[in-house]
Length: 133
Image (cartoon, rainbow, N blue to C red):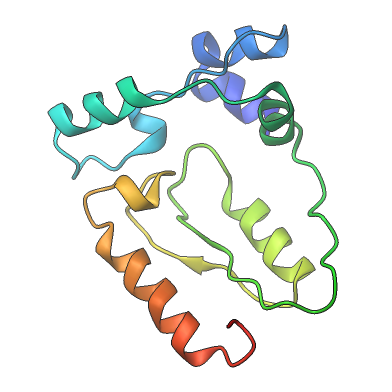
């Protein structure tokens, strides 16, 4: 993922390689459907991710082994410019499922213009998943 991050956002990624903050931009986080003013407000509220989280994101680590057999829902977007679809698929397979994808959305599904779609999907999954409670 580091190579993709450097190609897509070199000025925001390069400092993270040397211990600085990873800076994600509007195009990486949100779809074009989200109004610019709202996107700028969200980006302005982002705090710095911890170094371990930054390295995990850039290094594409293996998914942590589950304790027991909990149900896991992996969600994302095939248009995510931070986490590739291949990573979502790999993580979902690790937990015995397939990713639930929301085309046309950015990395921050819960803040994007169509945020209600992933929320509804989570609620639906929780209602149908007998061991998720």
